[in-house]
Image (cartoon, rainbow, N blue to C red):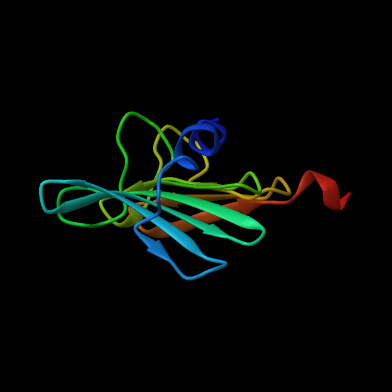
Length: 113
């Protein structure tokens, strides 16, 4: 998982912003923010951006990954995932299906039964 690789490699680097309990790493390509990793006390969030600064990731990869196991897929700032795949997957198994920013439906969590 990407977050596991981050934990191994990035804790040896100084964060760009350090507010004591919250630490933020920024990855830039020229002047464009491409990735931001935020570490809260009990939570890590890894976010990817396109050239205009909107949340986005190519090649079927999630644009937002959380340490709790959640994933969100974005297409240039809008929740989207094609091929009848869920755009949001929560850590408890709940899935939401979005197409270009419009919610289609969601599935029930398997743990709720």
